[in-house]
Image (cartoon, rainbow, N blue to C red):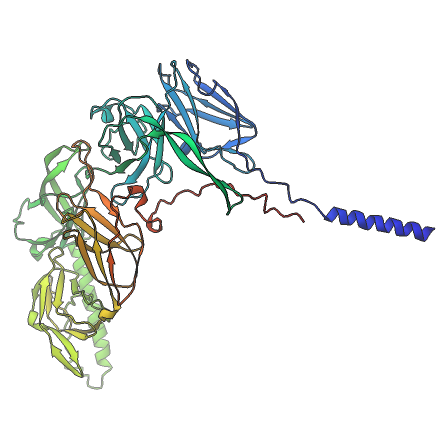
Length: 640
């Protein structure tokens, strides 16, 4: 009997253990439902509202994500609303006084999520009116950077019913929205009427364009919001990858919903002298805040400075370097000048500015001379020590120390492997006093011989310390560049040493060729070939809508087209005060995978494609935020 009872107990225990291990769920099913609004005070869509505090209550505990970024109140509030949440409630208190007969909207976007799984209550906007009706029209579109079609996130987009140009500068927006990660915006609660549309990087958060440094965009046309019946497909998913059914749903389409705003900054910055430097005695540098249309004038106060320097200037004339030629002048520790240039204030008003400059060297001339003398003395001592080690040393007739000639540094751009359309550049640390072109030689290797090649050596048109070497470089051939010693003499006595450099030019088989046809573009286009970082690799002007690129290294490329309306060879920004939009750009919407030995013809460039759909995602820096997609996670949930 005891053995029988023991067997029963053992069997029951095993069954209980087995039951315990089978059917234990891993936490239960996921919650995929978003929070549901169950009550609001005042009621959603209420009219005649006078209270400034709004309370929203949901069916579960919630939280707000990025409320400062996502929650937008319209009309815009000059005082930031107080937004709080806790448990199942959200409270918003408007600190500005309410306007009469006005629809207010508090657009939460997807900021409200449940506390557990983060399911968003998407596209939720709470609306009420202080008048007798709620305005329901909406205006939508996208905001892009004008120069590179980058979507701009978090920018203010607003409406004005006052159609005067000055409204943007003097009046706050009447209705506002903010752009999302795709640059998209929707302005809700809009009343019937005519409006102008603007975008603004609102630095001082006053909802008007009152600083020239703020990036802006304006729609050239006046809009009239309206609504129309429409039909859209609604996809029902069986699981995360399988479509169950597609049905078509009637809805109200609010228009316009395709407004494109291209943001730009006016090419303006206050002009003034930022700093002046004199790191060494023979070089004075002036740095200006922005471009100089005319070259500033520098005059000596107690000496003639008209022919006392070699001027090195940047392309925009905003950096000027004066290489002083006369040692009697530059040995002075402090030099006094009168500087004259066109300056401007923060409002863009230009005026003639004259400054008196006292420019001092970092170190005194005496200390520089003492350092050089010490260096020469150390070199002479080292020379004598080595001489005494020689068996030929004569104490009565010691060798004479001769200081070395100052070496002139030369940098040569030619390398072992060169592109067939490249040229060689010489760059020097100081301006040249003279060049002996007969001491520059170019040879091409023919079998075992080096055959002389005709060439041209010329100074760069921008940088006075740079020179170009041109020759008829042939593919797959090896060349040798030779310069004799003393071929180049610097302004301050430096003399170049001779050098020899060999280089081979690549084969034509190493390159691809690209022909591009762009319908609707004639001779006003600038076509740019870009790498994956949007650096311009090549640039050509269109001729009757056609453009050709040769000698392209294999790789992946992208294309951008600039509509050069004024024909100045570059992209130009806009100007709101003058009513000028920035010059338009267009991107080819696919990547080009170019291979060597191939010729490509690209003819499917659709420049009429919506601007926010043109730029390839691979080179778009502002990536869209990851969408929250409801996946059928419960179907894949495993029970152990």
